Length: 409
Image (cartoon, rainbow, N blue to C red; front, side):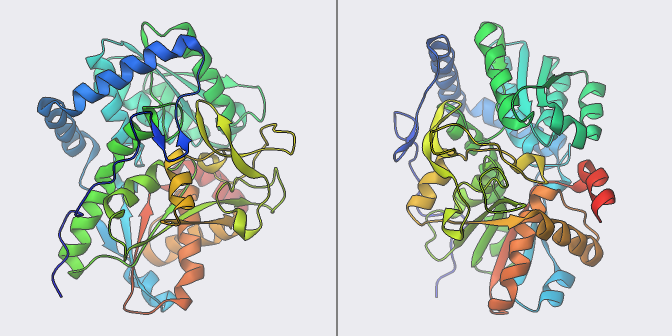
C-alpha cells in the first residue's frame, strides 16, 4: 500500500462565487453593509494572492502565537479507555489559550492592510475576545468587544484579561445575554462605523466572506495535524473529533482531510441539560432527538438555526459559553447534508466528567467546549478497535472555566 501524501489530492472548492456552500451561506445583510462586505471580500482576495501577506502571517503564527502546536499521543487516556489510539491536537498551548488567535492574527493584518484602525468583536467564552484584544494591542488598534452579561459573569477572568490588554468590553443586556446578542450589538456598531471599523468576526458564521475567511485562517490546524500523524504513525487517522459552536476549530481540523474518504469526521455540539428547545444548542444533531433546528437566516447567513414553530430564534443553553449559540456555520450544514461529517451532542454533565478525566489522566485541564468532544471520544472508545487512530482537537484550555469547574466538580 502506498504511503498517503502529506497533503490531500485536491482542495474542496466551496464556497462558490456567491459565497454559498451548496444551499447554505450567502449574504443576508442590510444595504449599509453590502459595500463594506464587498470591500472585505476584495481585500481578502488580494491578500490571499500576496506572498508577502502570507509570509508576515506565518511569521506571526510562529513567533507570536506559538505554531506549530504539538500532536500529543494521550498514552494514559488511551490505556484507560482500552480502545483506539487517541491523539490530542494541542491548540490549547497557543498564546491566549485557544485556536482563536489564528484567525485574529489573519484578520488583524487584513484590517491594517485596509487602513481600519478600529476593530470590534463579539465573544461568548471570551477566548475570541482575548485573542482580538491581544492582536489589537500588538498592532496598535482601538478595540471594542461585545459580550453578553450572562457570559461576562461566567467568564470573568477573560473580561479582566481583555480590559488589561486595552480593550473596551461592552456588556449586552438584551435577549439571553449570550453570544447571539453580542453579535447583534457588534453588527449595530459596524453599521454605524463602517468607514473606520473592521468587524473581526470570530467563527465560520455571518455573511460571505466571513465563513470562508475564518476557515482559511484556521486551516493550519488540519494541515499540521495531517503532516504530524503521517510522521508519527505513517498513515491517516480513522476519526477526527472537534466541538462545534459556530464551528471554527472543527472546520480548521477537518478541512485538510475532506478529500480523504477513509477519514471520518465528528462534530460535537452542546447537548446542555435536555432535549427540549431552550435546553441545548444542538443544531445538526437533530437525528439524536434534539428539538428545534431547521434551515433559516440568522446574522447574515442561511444555515441551520434553532427556532420555534413560528420562526422565532430560540434561547439556548450550554455550560460552555462558546457553544451556547442557536446557529452553526454554513459549511458544517453542507457537510452534514452530504453526510461527509457526522454531528452529535453531549450533555453538560458528560462534558464536566470528561474534563475531570483528562485532568487526572493527562495533566491537562481542557476548556469546557473542548471537553464536549472529549466526552464523545470517551463514549465511543469502547466500541472502537485498538488499531484505530482518533485525533481530538483540544481547541482551548480550561483556565477560563475554573470558577465553573470549582463550583460543579
